Length: 202
Image (cartoon, rainbow, N blue to C red):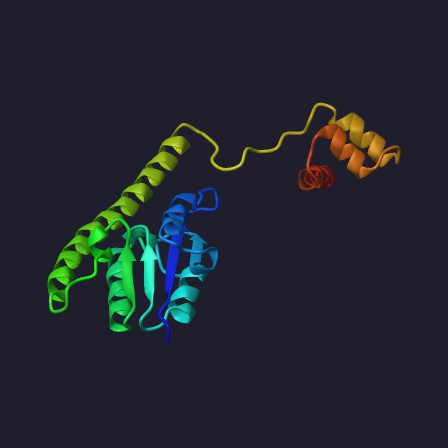
């Protein structure tokens, strides 16, 4: 059976983009069909794209390419376990930021490359995990600081527009439609009806 190469790209949120990783893969000859992506945190392995890649697509003799180790996971233990899983199942892992993983080793010298890669993986796995811990700590500190200053976190609370009473009176009288009332007040459907509901309950 012919061996295949798959490429895995990940960013932590929907707002981030995968372009940099995908361009690096295409420079290696990857096609869209060979690239699997996720827009999800690397805190664990439960990601739809990655799990499909790991459990369905990759077979013995195949190669998995990632831009950096932390694309697999931000958890050091998970990184080591995944690399061991791929080794045990005859799947080669290439990491673009680890040039030694891209090299073809002379026969009989594999142990040297394994030793070098294991050292690098240990160091980079620790860094990836520490970065995640530091990020979470900064987020927690930021939230705490904002709360102490009385700042409201999250989406700003909607405020009724100045023309609310005049427009809704015309709407209730049947002079204009709800859609027109929303247009005149500049409110979205959900917000408009939330205000209507508040008034009924008042």
